[in-house]
Image (cartoon, rainbow, N blue to C red):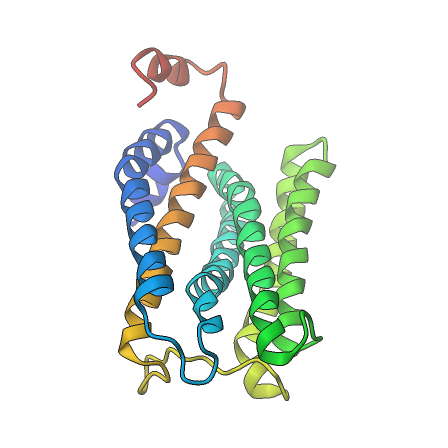
Length: 247
C-alpha cells in the first residue's frame, strides 16, 4: 500500500502513469458518453408525467453526481497534503477544482432548464439547489486561493483547510430532500431497494454516470500532467520524457 502511495507521490512516475492511462480511458469515456446521450435523448421512452422534458436528467444527474464525488477527491487530496505533505496532492487539488466547478455549473444550469417546465420557475431557493450553489462557491474558492498566494505552499495549505471544512456541505446536499421540505424530487436510483425509475431510462442514465466519471478522471489526469509540466519544466526527467515523445 505504502509503495503505491510513494509511487503516486513521484512526479516522473505519475506523469508517465497518467499519460498511459488517459490514452485508453479518454476514448472509452467519449464513446460511452456519446452512446449514453444518444440512447437517453433519442431512444429512451418519454416520461408519462413530464413527457420529453425529463430527458435532461441524462446530463443533469451525471454532472451533479460526479461534481459531488469530485469534491470528495479534492478533500482527500487536501487531507493528504496537510498530513503527509505530499506535493502531488496539491497538484491534484488544483487539477480537480476547475473540473468540479464546471460540473457543478452544468448541474445548476441543466437543473434550471428542467425546473422551468416542471416547477414553473428557473430558480427556487430549494435546499438542494442552494447547497449545490454553495458547492460551486467552494470550488471557485479553492481556485481563487491558489491564485491569491505568491507562496504556493501557503496556498496549498489554505486550500486544503477550505476543502476539509467544505465537506460538511456534501451530506447536506445528499440529505436535503429528506431533512427539509423540498421541490426537488428524491433520488430515483437506489442501491438498497427498488429504483424509482424504469429500466429503459435507468440503463442509459447509469451509462452516462459512468461516462462522466471516466471523463472526469481523464481530464483531471490531463490537468495534473499540465501542472507537472509547468512546475517541473526545467527538470531533467521531464526533458528526457519530452525528447522521447512525451510519454
